[in-house]
Image 1 (cartoon, one colour):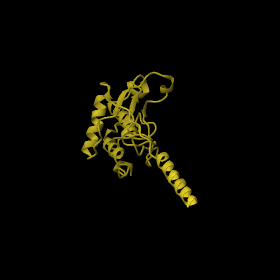
Image 2: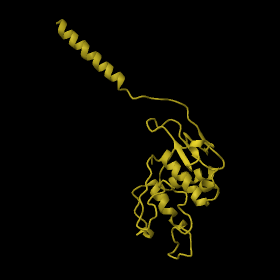
Image 3: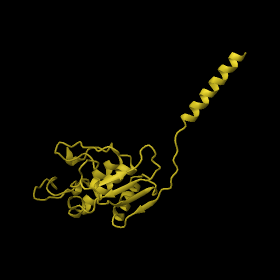
Length: 190
């Protein structure tokens, strides 16, 4: 009888310990929604594009701001900081607005693409870069590692005329693909 009681107590304690140890961690820290005014139009457009596709993204737990001039931020144009294990923790997008190749000398469409790219990391769980290209060499995704010239002149020809250096007609595809990775290849890439 005593042996059976000891076995029962042992199993009960083991189950109790496993239950306590395996309980998922929860971190409950306050988060904020704070968008720098210089980047607000791009953030607003991101949410408009999501809504137009029936995707509802909560406007909370997001900071979007110019990046600070630190040594780890000189070689990148933007970054998303988030805790993938605890996604409810604060998410922050920083854009390197001090850099000429990253911000000062690029088009409005490319600025939008950069902000959308970083928000794709933070809000759409597009953690990895997608560096695949179409046969013509154009990126298959706005989530390409170096997207600062996604709409830059003369890389993609507008209306198949090399003298017209404008590829903004490709914006719709890139935005569609950002929100839906299964978007079919566009006609211009075939």
